[in-house]
Amino acid sequence: MKVDQLSIFLENRAGRLAEVTRLLAEAEVNIRALSLADTSDFGILRLIVSDFEKAKAKLKENGFTVGRTSVVAVEVADSPGGLHNILSMLQDAGINVEYMYAFVQQSGDSAVLILRFDRTEQGIELLQKNNITIIPGEKLYSM
Amino acid sequence: MIYDIQNETLPREDLEKLQLRRLQALCERVYANVPFYRRKFDEKGIKPQDIKSLRDITLLPFTVKQDLRDQYPFGMFAVPKDQIVRIHSSSGTTGTATVVGYTKRDIDNWGALMARSFAASGATAADTVHNAYGYGLFTGGLGAHYGAEALGATVVPVSGGATRRQVTLLKDFAPDVICCTPSYALFLAETGEEMGINIKDLPLRIGIFGAEPWTNEMRVEIEKRLGITAIDIYGLSEVMGPGVAIECAEAQDGLHIQEDHFLAETIDPVSGEPVGPGEEGELVFTTLTKEGIPLIRYRTRDLTTLNTVPCKCGRTTARMKRVTGRSDDMLIIRGVNVFPSQIESILIETEGLTPHYQLIVARQGNLDTLEVQVEVNESIFSDEIKNLQRVESKVMKNIKEFLGVTAKVTLVNPKEIERSVGKAKRIVDKRNEG
Image 1: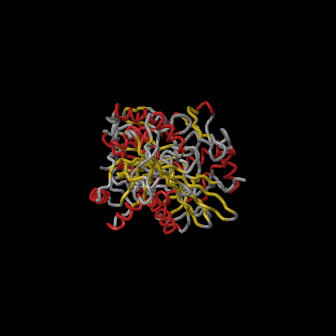
Image 2 (image 1 turned 90 degrees about the horizontal axis):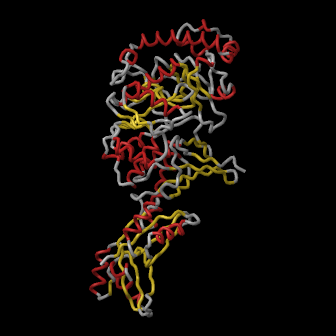
Image 3 (image 1 turned 135 degrees about the vertical axis):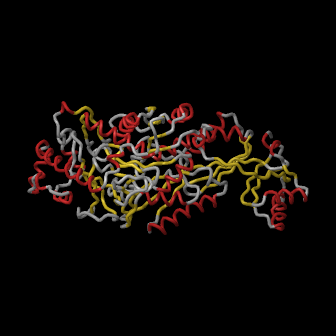
């Protein structure tokens, strides 16, 4: 039920992000979703990619520090209140969302949320209990 | 193991007699053959025959690096050029290069002293030595090379650079001993990991590290990551090269100075007055046997403490504490003295930080600023910003607490800080720019 997210340390310097995208392009890895968090001197790039291992190997080989995090991808109706419904459910259960990002699917009728919980297992359990559609990793990587 | 049992375990009384005899002969020699020293002696009103005891050494003039520069290239040589068989030179990164020349006997002595050093580290004639010190004008490569050969070991003269290839050679040739700078040893470990070769799993047993100041914390890190005993070696080209002093594997507690060849003193770097045993001071050497370029009271700028308490290894020679700073490497940040080694200790003690770091000193208005750049590795990396910021603030807090200076801590990409095959460049001082 979990999705492997690749996180990459980026020093705040011109061209670092482009270097990552160049390496991924060379490795023929497709980016499914991304989010970039930054501070004044460094950033963390979080990616869901078509081939996690290949992307990780390529980046490591080129000197990047990378990590693997388990995140959860859920599908919500692309309509007002879709996200709120899920967040309030998590709030009631006391599960903290460390960060999240989202993208809208091509078909246009649903959005995908990538969520990072402080307690991943409990998060998944709660979502399942409430019949929220969780997108398994294999499906997301090849979307 | 003790290579030269007779000379390394001389009763101190005999050692001092030998030192005095050699010091007197040295004074005669430099007075007769080196105009620079004759002038210095004359200025102080000293004649060689005034040296009647070892204590009289304080009557003699100091020699500083600038003197060697001023006499560039051959003005300090004490023998005619035809007796010089080899010339080495410093890199000249901090000014004009200094040049040193060796006679055949100097080279033989150097080899013997390096053989003593290898033996002290636990190496034997049956071992293979991977020598990754740079070959060339720098004394490290050839110094270690001749020493390993004098011991009877097998030398692999890899020199510096081509790091991936070095890892392959470490795996294929399975050496027992490696010689390089401590920072390069860690770079080799990192490169090995990238290549899927864990140096810890190789037969390598001993590392002999020198040519740059390092800390005990760094030693612990190296021993852990490479699975070896890390031995500190000390030397400088002006005095000889590597092998002036060496740590013994038995105690790993201070470096034995080869006192039958080098007379060591510690002085107050400001007043030039001798400091007592057990007190920190600037290390000063007088070369007792060198023919090519003998030096009287050469000021090394290295800060250390001398210890003459007998060592459990059986050597009677004085030991010097590991050199962690140079009087000219000391940074003064807003009036506070800071040595790179102190920052290094703090970084290594802050869990998971690599000892790859660089200090950037700059000036904003009239205030000095210190930035500590530290490389991020996978053990501290997190997908959450707050975790990385916690590391930054922890280092900042520790620096403030232990050194009393406020530093900006910046995490940088691994390999961002330039890896050198020779001495690591720890300080970038921008205060004198524009």
